[in-house]
Amino acid sequence: MTLLAESSSSTVRPVLRGRLGAVSAAHPLAVAAGQEMLIGGGTAADAAIAAQAVLCVVMPDACGLGGDMLALVHAPGTATVAINGTGKAPLAFERIANDGPHSITVPGIVDAWCELSKRAGRLPLARVLDPAIRLAKNGVRVSPTLAKVLGAQRARLERGGAQTWPLFDQPGGAVCKQPRLAGLLERVGREGRTSFYEGVDARALVRAVRGLGGLLSEADLASHATVIAKPIETQWQELRVAAQPPMAQGVLLSMAVNALAGAGDFPSDLNDHVAIELTEAAFAFRSQVARGEALLSEALTLDFEKAGHRGGPRAYLHTAGVAASDAGGRVVSSLVSVFDDFGSAVYVPELGITLNNRGAGFTEGDNAAGPGKRPVHTLAPILVADSRGVFGLATPGADGQVQTLLQLLIGIQRDGLDLAHVIARPRWRSENGSLLVERSHAGIGKLQSLGHDVVPIVAGEVRFGAVVCAGFIGDEPIAAADWRRETWAGVA
Image (cartoon, one colour):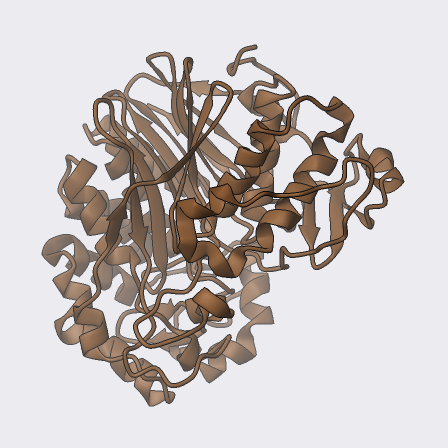
């Protein structure tokens, strides 16, 4: 079995081979920014940050400087590290909401960029952010998707004070400049984290939140710190899978992989059924994610002959992925997000950004809301390694992330598919008790016969994710991208 088979099929994009490095991201302009860093002597970390910053300019509905970033970083000869660029609830916390000023946690992406740049970058942060700055200054064309979301979220944006945002009410195809965002990116590049978490910009952020009744404070921002931790690793035959530790719910994927490793042999036509059942079993532990690696000792049960209808995964979407590798052997797998469309929709006019609503991720038990607590995050990038190489995989889709990644791992390990075909093939998604399945999926009949509540959906629908992939096969940098959404890949 090879991971590098070629294909000319319209939905099977070939795995690209590079020399200086490779990058895959949720938008072609983000890929171009990553390539620019690699050509300029930068590392995978530089490429990933550059791509993420561009995504914040062109996809503000999904991500932004008011949101968060999680990443896994592999470098030869060193232990893989997990970078948790997420923030806490205000210390003055009184109540949590799913939307608006009481849903905001401290934005973590800026400090995470600074940490990633310091640990694994080579270029000055100002240089790395330059492609995003240029796009914000000169303007980007509003995509039909962004225009549709702007229209759908108009009332929320108005409540959040976004009427003066250059993007507000923009039609598809319009070229929109974002000078305030460009200025913020310039200050971050020049001054680092202090430009965002202290001083004038921090006061502007707090003023916007408190003006709408929120409780975020300058002290909350100043005390923020990125968490650097060891990933949770599972072994499935020759595959080693590294996942983001708490408070990300990547451990739910680790639980499913661990269960597959001990499941023994079963017919290949049950692959999807088994994965669906293990997904639903794992999601029963969502509120216990804080237990981390200890959850791997929990047994996940399933009936091989019928659907259990346990539910679990929800319908949330959003998020954007970036994966990158470089000639020095580094690999970064990452996701950036503001959670719901435009996050909380609370707008900071001086900074040109909306703020996240990650507080909506609080639930109950260990994940109950409280002062200075981090909610469970859906962001779940992974790194996969075996004797052939190492590569990062990530996808948007909230609770769909664990499910999509599990399907990819099964395709590689049990079905013997190469990366191009495993990314391209039809998918399913368990959501609110139903099983959404792309209409072209060959296993629909089998899933129905096992009792799953199958809902056929048009192939490529947004809920089926958009995988980014970059890494190494042997000593060669590679990248691959989904055909879904605007996902792209490039090499240098």
